[in-house]
Image (cartoon, rainbow, N blue to C red):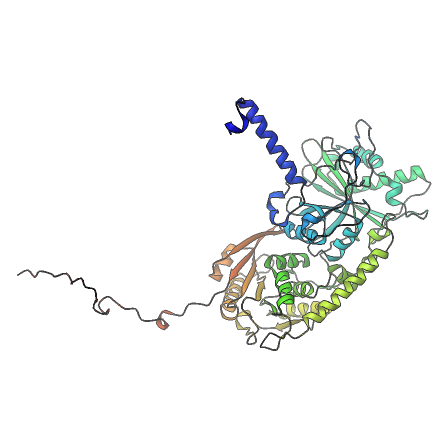
Length: 571
């Protein structure tokens, strides 16, 4: 170090080291997101740093007007930056003409790395998680449409509109009203481009300790709506209508409180109100949908399968011709096998929502906006996804040529002992159109479930299970017996397979009497879960079946040249 800096003083040396660290950190953060470096880029705040070209409105001084649509990303000195995602590893570049937008997607806490990987695979730029339940990314409108169609682990997909500066939060409803009125161009946001107005809805989410005047989410959302309506009335003599079921512009206002006030970020959702985890195969309305009280969310099931490597196993099966096998001995209402079949058949979740859910998903709000270019791009995306699904269904249903047994390229087997749950699983499998892909064994205990010979292929089989752990299902003795039955099934039927078990109680996990190889924390609701990996090896034979133990007296005399030690007998 002395040679490097010469005879610099201690203070100068510290300054040089600080400058080096700062510039190195800026280079790392500015670089594209690399999937293998998820953990080092996790942000502890839900409010990202503002873009260099983003304008903010100071509600106190009344200076600067916020442009609600993000300007094209530019380099220094005004040169335009071409959208380049070569660092994401897929080698694609967006030909968007400079229309790069900022998006934010939410997910179940713990699935942020999986969600980030999905977005990177689609070609998203500047992908970085926000905490453990959301991911920021950038890209053109086409990327937003593809994310809405293909991403499996997201709950919301939103485009950034405006946000308060980091050093100037709002404190009252009047401040919030003033900020929305000046920061958002209501004509651009709510105009339909044909002289009319879009319908809207506003939802607010409050995080942290916000000022008392803003702590009520309903009145906060009402304040945002009133600010937009007042802005429209100021420009024309009518007002936009509110539609809570299928709005053209569904807005979400997120407030994050601290000791100084509330930081506000306004988004517009690309999809109708509700969560994207609902695929629609459980039923689109409350009247025709009956859900198991301990049913797993579809997005969580997809994320767990991604972590288990099911997508990679299916990709390998398409490359080398060997089958991909998935086994679920306690399937419940069938979330894991259904999502596994959708992934194997390359059926997009957005396509499933169009097929099984409400009509609002056929033309989502994003294609109705005046800056979306109309529904043509979305219709083309639906056609492409339909062709991929047809090819995927043909592949999973094709008999595997390399297998000695009569089985298809993708084999998915599940079992459920409770009649009510098995009926729900059979109904949802049928609604999803996967009755020919998923084999369901009903009313059979896991410890008594015998798989057909040769179905478990060593190195190509993944066992997944979500056994009861006593939170939503009562009966401690029944819960423990379920884990014991799972242990017996794994040791008897899954030798040579890789097993993944979801657990919410470490005491129950010990009943498996197996050593884990990996453990991933997941949080759903108020429950802290663990997605645990095991490798199932053959059980060692009992002591009576092993080779007999030979004592020293039974060993043959030594052939060594060294004479045995003589003992002297004492008279």
